[in-house]
Image (cartoon, rainbow, N blue to C red; front, side):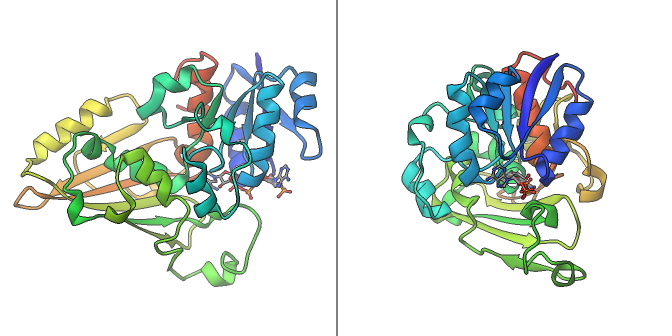
Length: 315
Ligand SMILES: NC(=O)c1ccc[n+]([C@@H]2O[C@H](COP(=O)([O-])OP(=O)(O)OC[C@H]3O[C@@H](n4cnc5c(N)ncnc54)[C@H](OP(=O)(O)O)[C@@H]3O)[C@@H](O)[C@H]2O)c1
């Protein structure tokens, strides 16, 4: 058994991580208490890897300490996702205090960056909204198929667990129950992460987050104009080539996915279609924000970083 630590076990992602690690079979989860010095915890428990299921301010301090003590790090926060510290400062409203680590931090969406994750010391686990949007748009973006001048529109809805376990006036039961609203319009901090991963520019990208009155799940609908007409078969073939059968990103031939059927799973299900001209694409992508959008993806990263089989503990 390999020892891996988890900081932030009382939070929603931390709890999900502990649940998954309990069934992993190859990793022994060690709870790292909030009050413990990180370096001391890594050395005392011989941690090979530390998960940070913590706010970005906390991860900014904890990641350098864990790396210094010799552990690998999978950080679930946004602290190490953006390559440019000035962009981080703008969107997160604070200076980056460990910019020297940004060049080596690998964006841990394993279906896109698996090889880099294998050799990484520090992995920045993607955000929940970005996971659904990037998985949905990546094949079109990397094929250069999108007419970006027409704007790429992403409309995403999330369950309330995406906001963490501390209640706030906006996530209080009475505010959320039987209600539905958009929030952080044009200023959601996940925007630069999606633009960076998809190679788009901010001016071509529209993202709106919405709060669903459910506990968990994200459904994103993306709209893109294509540079030339495509057939649905061509589009399906492109997605299937990048997301082969047997992986956690599943391309659906028929029927749009829904949040309930993916709850508790590490799958990202994608449905795509075109209008009659073949130049307007609509992509629907669905995940459980706490699994593929957080803890499940973190476990996928650990599996590669520590040399386990890629799907261990997740199917
Ligand atoms: N929820 C999601 O769907 C989701 C998805 C992807 C990524 N993320 C990211 O993952 C991270 C955790 O998210 P979450 O939703 O699980 O948050 P959460 O439910 O609010 O949990 C945060 C955890 O961090 C702990 N913590 C807070 N301040 C700390 C400190 N100074 N030192 C040590 N631990 C501290 C909390 O302890 P207390 O018990 O004291 O509060 C709690 O255990 C965040 O960065 C979030 O942005 C979340």
